[in-house]
Each structure stands twice: as structure tokens, then as C-alpha cells.
Image (cartoon, rainbow over all chains, first blue to last red; front, side, top):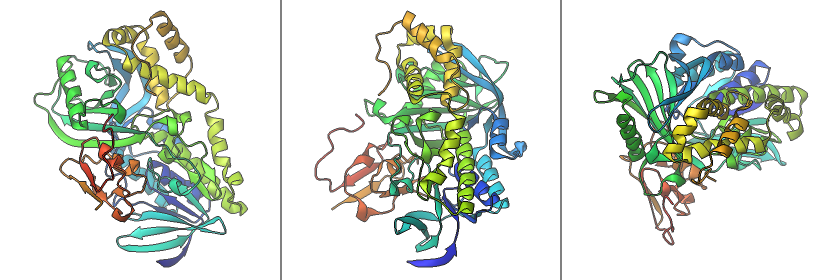
Length: 420
Length: 70
């Protein structure tokens, strides 16, 4: 293996939203920074089947620049809502600046801004291993085509997503339990029940208890229709395609949409991990985890949504902290710990136990019998919509969990509760 | 003999196999389909056979895994 005789302060592995922001803010604060990604093109393929951002302005604030909205923001979304098994709308939660976004363009905008701020970016470059000398991070082994080579660095930022190859080579734990999602982008769909504003719709489907099913409007006649689920839920061997077809059947049966003339213009799928196995620690000497590689209960999001806002925030914090550590000449766990400390300060309002409880109440709704789900959506759908947004990392829990808890106490159910 | 066979017609590119494989045998790159990146590391544990589309078969396993999709 050859050395490229190149030396960086920081190497970021992965150029998704977290990696681009880590690269941008490390470079901007004076660290010599390289971002590598094994894909050929930033943002593609798309693993996010919904591509919904609940507050684009907030994302811009976190990223530190404004997007070209004509490119990024595809379709205005007014908020999120639940659709009960019988097909009734419930619990509309309004969003401030929500959109169905063009995910590849969003990611490209983040990478372009990182490049402009001085981060070097190499696509088509796979991370293979960490090089350590005397126990300290000294570089990385990379591969481009058939060629393997090393570059020197002091800090590695792992932004390599749910399967984080980097964190497997550290003492930091990575998430393990898997969710799978499948979404289709359908055009030429007719709404049979007109709506004033377009909401991101979450469906409770009797034939798919425990599954997470959604319709994400992408135009007046264009809709993203998707499902996400833990593999353990599939008892009878259906494939993801078959499960998606079941959801489509349900959508037809409740008569909200006419899909008869619809064209499928794309199919997206992805996998993600549950919060249960999330990383406990985010840094060690010379290594930091960001974005999905850093998944942890604080962010609650756990059903296949890659969590762009969280990725941008953690990437930026880690990039800034890495640059400070380089300036100090100290990349120990203690100094890099400034990043998780910032994160904890941002999310200090909830304990892990509270978040786990919130998640269990969410699954309780997904697993209840259809009659109970209808009642719950009619009575506390708004609280559930808030809880959903929270689990996407969007807002504080506020008082939704106590209200949800109170309702279930008065309306007990014999159906099994959360998926463990 | 151990081999990992991926039916590209079935693969939906969800990354499940790449995430699940403890030995980093499987990967996704460039397009959305899974491929075998490092066959010599495969221990034939069969985790990837839980593929949501049943697109993966591993040959040379010592014994069949007891449960699939259970």
C-alpha cells in the first residue's frame, strides 16, 4: 500500500449532510480538512424515502447558510397529521417552514458550501481502515478503484451513516437493530377528498399493525407513498415490495386517493437503526461520530428517517470542536468531548428514560387494534402528531406524553404494547 | 464452499445486508444494488439471508439458521 504523502488535520468519512457540515466547519475554522465518500455523486442514491423537512429555515440556521430554495424546496407542506384506520384525518400539527425537498440537491448544496469553505472532497473513495501509531490516530487507509493508499491525519470524523465502518474500528458502539423502508414516487394521482393544505400523512393500517406508513405530498398530483418497519414484524415472509403493495391496497380501500392513472417515477429504499442500540459515547482519542453514525436516544428518530437536521447539527458541532482541538494541539477524548457536551447542552431537557417512554407510547398506538386507533386519533391525534415530530428531532416533548399517558390509562387496551 | 449470491433483479438497494453483515462482506456502491465486496471474510453466518426481498443466498453454511424473518 502506498502513502500519498498527504497530511490533513481532519479526515471526514462520508459526504452526506453530517459529513459535509463537519468538513465545512472544520475547514472554516482553520483545520486542513479532507472529506471522502465512496459514492460517485453526492446525494445519490437517495436512501430517504420521504424527503420531508419540517422546518427548512431552522435547517438553514443550523447549516449557517441559505439554500437556493428553487432547487431544494420542492413542495410546501403545512404539517403532519394521522389518518386513522377508517380513513379519518386527525391531529394536524402545523409546521413553520415545511417542505418535501429534493434530497440530492439538498445534500449537494451542503457539500458545495463545504468545498467553498476550503474542505477538500474526494468522491469515489472508500474508507478501509484507521492507522494508529503508539495507540494514537495517525491516518486512514483509503481505496479508489483498485488502488489502496494512506493519508495522514490527526482526527477522523465518522459521518459514514448507519453502518459506520469507521466506528466498527473504534471502541465506540454503533447501533445494530435494523429498520427497512421502501417508498415510491407516484405522479398522476388524484385526491378524492380535497384538502385546503397538504399535510404529511401518517397512516394506521389494520393489515400492517406496527408498521410505519406514510404519504408525503410532492405536488398537487404527485405523492411519495412509503412504508418502514422492523424486520422482526414480518411474520409471514412478505417482502418489502409486498408490504408496500398492502399499504397501497389500504389507501385505495379508504378512498382518499385514486391511483388508477398513476405513474411510478422512482422507487427508493433505505435501512436505518433503532435507538435501542445507539452509541453511548460519541468521541474517543482522535475519533468523533456524527449524523447517523452517532445515532443515540437523544434524537429518538428511529424508523428509517435519516434525520437531516440532526446530521447537520452534529456535523457542525464536531467540525468546530475538531478545529479547536487542532489549534490547541490536543485531540484527546477529553478535548474532543467538547462536541458531545455541546450536544447535551442543546438536548438537556429530556432524560433517556423519558425518550424511551415516549417511543413506547408511539408504538402502542401503532400496535393497537383499529377501533382503538380510531378513538385515539379522534381524541389525542394532535398529541400524537406532536410526539411524532418530537421523535423526528423537531421539537421538545412538552406536555404531549402526559396527555397521551392519561388517555391510555382511561382507555386500556389488551393488545400488546411496544415492540421491544 | 462459501459463496454469497445476490439476485440483482430482486435487490431494492435498501442496505440491510451491508448494515447487518458483521464482516463487511457486502457493500453498496455507485448504483443502488448490493454487491459482494470481500468474499474471503465471509463466515457464512447467514445474517444477510434475512434480506427483506430474499435476494441473497449464502452457500457453504455449516447448518441452516433456525429462523428466517422470525
